[in-house]
Image (cartoon, each protein chain N blue to C red):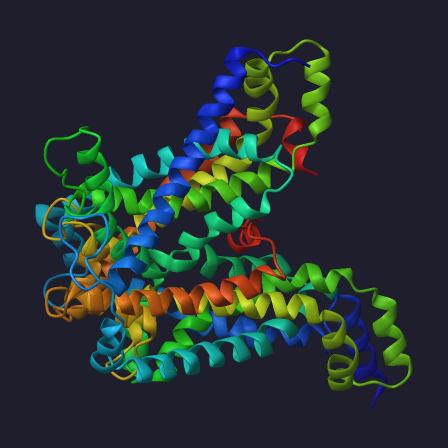
Length: 274
Length: 294
């Protein structure tokens, strides 16, 4: 089938659009990285000199060690707890048909479809009244709200792939629920659990709204600290903020790269398709 | 164990209720406690204003232009951004579908989604600023005489919504496009349909249900634009979006009742638009071809 001139022009236009988008995206990231290493950068393409002093400054002034520790604690807790609640629930959803299952499914879809800022404000109000907001546990609970349903929706197809006869055999040999999970299901589900955990990890590092609404001065994660740094731009040199932005990007993108070894990029957005 | 207990257990099991089903309970309780309860609580709280009758919050919102105008401001940003993203996504997804190695492109495009809006805002502040690379390029090529202002105004927020929104709509559209049986298009081609006809008469109708969902999800995200409207926009004026006033009511004026009312209005607008989109889908498009994905 020969392609006409119009069709080839159209294809060219589409690729030019993609190229333009990717170019701007890379330039945006590039200008942050270059700026974070630059000494003075005024009316030139590149800074006049290079230094790593902004990283030292960001490390000290933004209390990066503390923030990174809090981020690791929040993300670690969210990953573990959402797995412990989500994987068994996904197993039940995949294996049993019970009355009201559709309602339960809808219940799990809602926190993924409603944007965080909409439900975050009433949720933060409730967490403040329970004296949980402002603490690290408030941040963890808030971040679990989209994470638990997310794990469930990712895990259901993975459970469905396992032959039910494997479980039946384990039951026949006398395995209880705990042993069934520990010795049969978890080993078989490892790829799915790994994918779900890594996606929750990446999403929690980048989750701004819920953490922002529920965190206090000692429970800020990296992304919230970055927001405050940009918000108060002018207090500190721009390069130091960009240094912090680079630390954030590296933290996020390393985990994204690891996650992409186990999942397809399209899975990151299509989780709530149906 | 008595026979009566035994038969109750059996009857429960026949309906799908046994110890395995119970595993779903922690997750259900969790979502009820931290999602449904706060939402209902917020709804009730919004009818208990600090001063005035039970509707005082809503009356206040719709009588003060400073408040009700935020809905218009948000729509003026969110609607064009959503439409632009979805309209651009369709031809790109149709083209990328034919690619052998999609992985590199999809990986690059998933980066802005992963970085999130705060990081994109900081990146765009550097990149689009008066001394940034974009303005430098435009000046170098003589396209403009003086740097154009793209930050701290409407365009900054708009561009941030394209940078994070386009990859989202594209990846979603791609997943729908790849679900269409290529045989259908080939059959049309064999029967003599040109590319344009194949698009309008085969691909688009098959894609319509997925596109309606993509539009709905993309709109809801754009409508709740928050950090970039503050960092990259003009939060006191042209980009004073509804989420900013909800946040300010809660955390600057500590009026949780008014904040809840605004959050409920946000939810109502989202629900309204989504319902309209999904309803129009069933009006525009009927018939068995909608199951093309299966």
